[in-house]
Amino acid sequence: MNITREDVIREVKKIVVDAACNLDPEMVRFLQLAKSKETAPLAKTILSEIIQNQEIARNQGIPMCQDTGVSVFFVELGNQVRLDFDLVEAINEATRLGYKEGFLRKSIVAHPIDRVNTKDNTPAVIHIKLVMGDTLHITFAPKGAGSENLSRMKMMTPAEGIEDVIAFVKETILLAGGKACPPLIVGIGIGGNFELAPLIAKEAIFRPLTDEATHPINRELEVRLMKEINELPVGAMGLGGVTTCLAVKVNSYPCHIASFPVAVNLQCHAARHKEITLGGNKHEEI
Amino acid sequence: MKKYNLPLSTSDIQSLHAGDYVLLSGKIHTARDAAHKLLVKSLESNEVLPFDLSETTIYYVGATPPKPGQVIGACGPTSSYRMDPFVEPLMNSGLKVMIGKGERSDEAKAAILRHNGLYLIVTGGIGALVSQRVHSSKIVLYPELGTEAIHELEVVDFPAIVAYDIFGNDLYTQQ
Ligand code: SF4
Image (cartoon, rainbow over all chains, first blue to last red):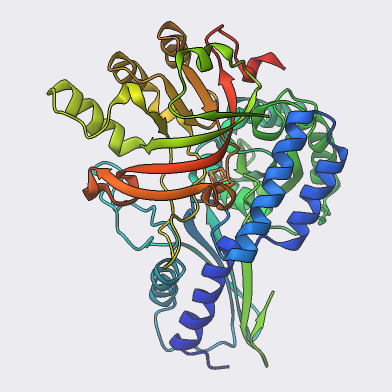
């Protein structure tokens, strides 16, 4: 299967622009459900504003949030796909064009110390996984700084257990308060090592909202945390009520006998992401 | 829901309580991280600003670029805590009202109370909705900062919630 640089640039550019203005319908349904269950008047007003905002964004083609984020890509490259170009360069080019033509905010500085803006939102953060098959699957997620800045990672010790993970997650949500723009989607990565735990936590955020972890321990964490997080005194925008999070997703990976890494990646209600599959027999947008 | 014209008068400020949902109309000035740094420098070197801090309201925002025909792009609030170190110097120069999102440091909160000021918040992530309430926008200071330049906005029915009032109430700890 041959995929050209032009195919990648054209299709990736589309999802870059689309993600900023069109919130996933499933996310909208979760927001509406949360609003109907919310009892605190101020929280209900806030949820109405959030729902109204994404409608305006969709209808008028305005980004739903001005922080159009770091451009994060998860790429799954099939072993039968032939690329005779630099995929990372093509994705960056698509990012550059998408942020320009879509009138998105350019929020990347070239170095964290002297902070000079690169003016085109590149470089993107790109994770490439090799898989079997004849398709190239790309997920794009513009990740705002508000919730990213309040995400946390901890090297716990093997003596600790499920209660300690729950305590660390809840502490993270309390520390974030209204600053991470709740209602949140909470992505948790346990196990792996120092770099893998945050990565699987981020992948967890982009699991389908109705998806349930298959491992029984992960599932137990998801169910318990969903309940306990919504009992915390945070609520929509940190102003109370029962809507601190809309979903909790836990991913795990085996780890060293002496290690217990835990990462909590927070995703605000502007949970933007779009996917595309190239190759196979068709170009399909999800 | 109460409607107010900007700038808020002393009696307006006295009438507002944490938790009040207000619709604001009038002029505001935008500033975020980089503009705050420059503002404090300008004040320290006694430069004359093109606007009077005691006559305006600062909104922490960096909008997306407007499409042709639009006044402004998405323009929801950014997190206020990053501007906390600048609260005292700006309030010393007359600023009374700030708009952003999220909890602030104890120092910033104390400074706002000491200066009889007000901290308002806007729901984070509703940049498209807020953009509809902005009727004009122009850069008035630090154009080199691009989206972070200080813009003067004319807003109509800008939706905000009082977070810290002059009576020491804090909406974040109240519930
Ligand atoms: S945390 Fe999310 S919703 Fe809030 S300002 Fe940042 S990107 Fe927007």
